[in-house]
Length: 155
Image (cartoon, rainbow, N blue to C red):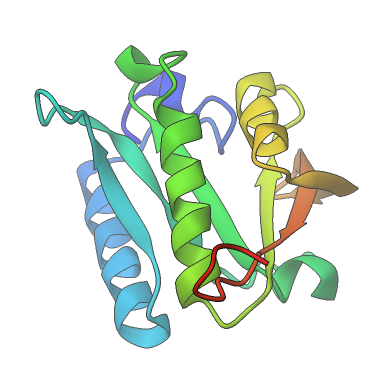
């Protein structure tokens, strides 16, 4: 989050060391309070840091259609852009959510200029349901149903 290319469409201001430390604590807090949160994504062969993906309840104030869902988010290191990591990680996060989250609706928000993330969202069946403004920036709001596992697969 300290690199301009990473935060270009999510606030635009690279994180300081203090911001990153606070983010880490916020993520740990999500796991402790909600039983879900973010994971670090690493390349299997090298263990190199790829990025982060996960679930949050940030209570962004974007209305009940958005704020009542589990919010999926992802951010990757610039070296990992365009290599399929995001699709794999988001797909895995959705599979995990279908098995572990009580909420049956997932949401995400993406800046309209972030076509790569919007493409990932659509590939995993998120659908646009609204447009809004968050922190004075335009965002597209997406949602999807989370399938429930029944022992024989997803239903």
